[in-house]
Amino acid sequence: MDDIDRTLIGLLQQDATQSYATLGTAVGLSSGAAHERVRKLRERGVIRRTTVDVDPVAVGRGVLAYVMIDGTTWMGDTQQALAAIPEIEEAHVIAGPASLLVKVRATTTQDLQLILRKLFDIHGVAKTQTIVALETFFERPVHIPTPPGADGPIPG
Image (cartoon, rainbow, N blue to C red; front, side):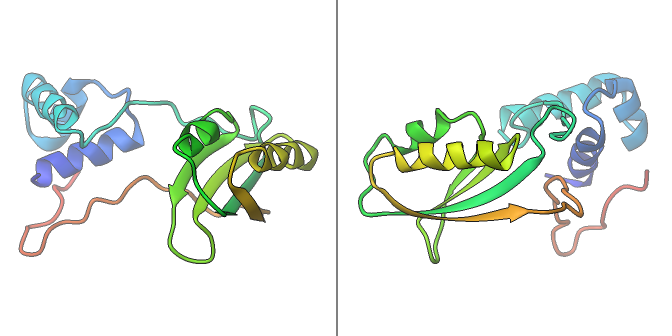
């Protein structure tokens, strides 16, 4: 991955609806060359998907919580059971005071309580610890560092 690829990714993270002509102009390439670069980034799995950033509050999902889950045993269907709960946005195996960490968006604290009950219905879940976010200062896309010795990002 070179500076052009990093710049294209940064531009797409800001606004994935930009035309290839606009992207190409920003990095000094033709529209076709920019398209080919983006296609290769997708092919290599660097760009996993193109999506829309939805404001959770605007769609009634204003309660953000992180839930640490500890269990006695994990069956093979734990991942599928977590994925079946639509309010869970992310699930991670972690090292530390628990085995799993999930990010949950709920409509109300009562809704969050119902989601926590669903977690306890999953075989092997013994304990949860929930942290409710009161305010989000910022969320950012993945930062792609410039490797040592590289010239840095292309000015835009």
